[in-house]
Image (cartoon, rainbow, N blue to C red; front, side, top):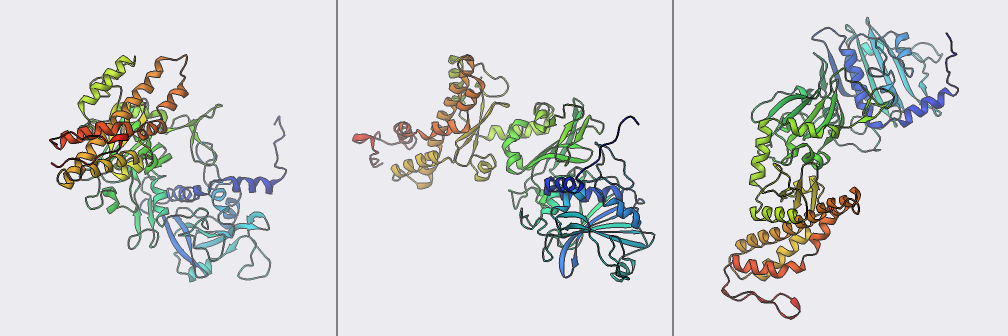
Length: 555
């Protein structure tokens, strides 16, 4: 030995720092992963992790129970130390030996009750915080007065009806207060959690489970009756119109999943009718069965066009799976993946966006193309944009847009789609990665123009027909103005000495495109003229002095 090993001068401070800095939301992952690791060592057919609610002094507490080799009292004592593991290999890319304790103790200072059954004997340790120090809580044994940190609770466990014939381990979360229901409120409302947080949390973390291991959720942990088996996304059966295809390329596997809309609840995926959580499309990196950097719901819908999913992102999932032997390691708290080695650069799934687009299977390309064709955009507008781009010195984007135009236009009309793309209160969003302009046709300026046209031409015919023509007319004018503004903004790329990358991003931003749409009063005379033509007025619509709208002539 040519060095003297480093010691910890203030052990209590180091442990408190590790625990208090750990993201609380990692608690579920760490506790379930511990259960999976242990259950893997059980005989085939007996590999089970069960989450349930148990009563402690009349209050429901969350329990995570697993089969697998149990621990003696001495092993249970050692397991409770930070960076300690029983029957696990420690390595940066495998097991740290401190995840569950570090992740859970800050939210369970009142106590984490560990019980383990080995050979018919059950021992128990209560971890918690007392007087500002985390550790094993000293308690009186069933017999005797001397306080101890490991209890033999075999008699008590048998009286509770627990099976002592096979080995098992269980942890029960007491939370921060005796009256806290840790099944529904694991963090004492900081943050508050949705009713289905357990199933949702498992769904967004685990792509697959170890061979033969079942994860069961007890009554009250989901919205179905009785105990239910959780199936991760990568191990669900594919039926009906659902699709799942895996394509390999550049040393990774890309999983493309399509979960069709529920016919009765089209805002939900069809699998929501049979699974334990409301399934939404998602995006994530996958390594060794776990998902990292998961985006679901609106955050996923916002970035989906970058990955080639322009339409119905809530029904699509993209998972980029790295090989088990990839040179990556999880960060300290297992929230992200980092490149192994000295640089420790964090990996993000967006680094694979180009590959994901390039590997899209034919059925996905055809589906997206069919929806693009149904998204009615005037061919004449594309020709106009192509001409404007050419005169502005902007090169055409072949195979990405129509007629040589520099981008493709996608119109959003449904509020949920608009909300998912973060376009509430904004007119449009440009995606340079895929040369797409996504327009909010319900933007407030568009709606205002439509209302003025409907009011002005209210006597021109059936109200439904007038509204339809007004909506189409205003929409066409606004899309044209936004698209032309974007072309002129992109053309500034031809002036690199005066316009840098940040300047281009500013003039093509959603905010800049929204301002262009807000300035619409000069468009109204031409919109009125076009409305008169569409409604076949016998006389042209005239303007009163000062530019205010006049009443339409009688048809």
